[in-house]
Image 1: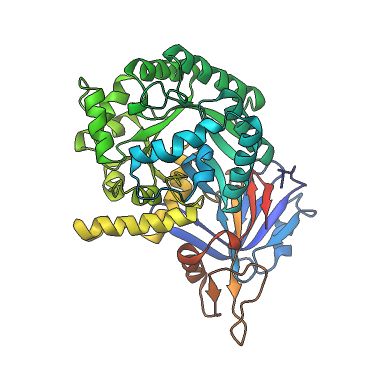
Image 2: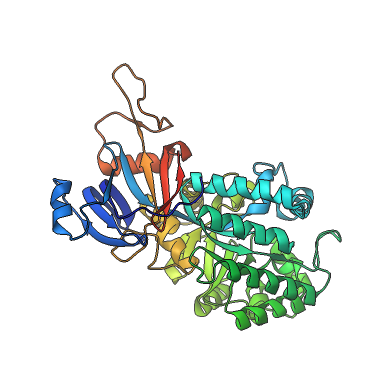
Length: 459
């Protein structure tokens, strides 16, 4: 479904839930949220008995469309995927017994290189954007390929569909096959600039799509290439995304490739790539000194638990990162990760934190409230949209999803069009419904998705 222009004002009634803070999930069972023609939340009412009373209270809302959550449904902020590879989508679920470096050679580089074809890229990217939207992802930080035309095509698709996106042309001039790499440092910088310019030309305000400078990771870029991209980021004011300390052999490889650097983090710091607009994926094997460097630079972290487990990379100590004061969001990291669903990453983040707790201390565990925060407000901070999306506050934009769960009828059958793994038996509180969704829900429960008040997906 293509993004549509909002028609007038809309009042969303019923149950809504969002995270007020890392530890506080706010659930309102009888609320009303007014969203104006610009897609901005104009008012929030709690303990609403009659919607007519709300309409009378606010001038100019008599003709507003009214949408109800339904007894077994609720409204929730759109998910924010802070790290994924659109170009790897066809390989989702294909990793076999590989680890990171062998996985790149076996699956990733051949697939990405094939997306120089505009027709093939159009098929893959259109499908993936649709897939992420169907899972309630309203904002996504995408890696494309080294190809400028098809990277630009991904931005076109996101803009047309109305999904917020950071779209990055991947840069690499070493440690990749000869058939798939930048010919030179100057080419890497020039082609990155060309993609930046194009994306800014199709969305000058950056309200929906923005460019992001994307060195693949340190082992695939020379020091000169990293420095050139750091300078480009400084000159253009563009965000940056890359990977760091995903697994131990990768960290050792960085030591060998950059013997003069103190650490993996220092490689990026020296190149001018650590900024408040930088997203580093994984951060599984960081030293205490590296963590402090990231904190001082304002660099953000994308936690990708499913991918880290699938490729046996390790368990990121998210509690430690949060306690130090780093900003953390969640990433699906398709196709290292096996699902485009941030809801799935919420579950995986909980499990990974419990694996960490089994070998450290009980307080390493993440709660349901905390992973939902990382999926929404935390992710908004990571991608530079803090205060704009990720929650339901007056003045924020309506990036949201309508979740519907299946009630069980007498006799045991589930009623409604949104049958899935979540069964409601009638005793559940609003908090119970949210928890059941987190642990058992999927895209079958996502009825509608909005970005800036515009309907971008309907099941």
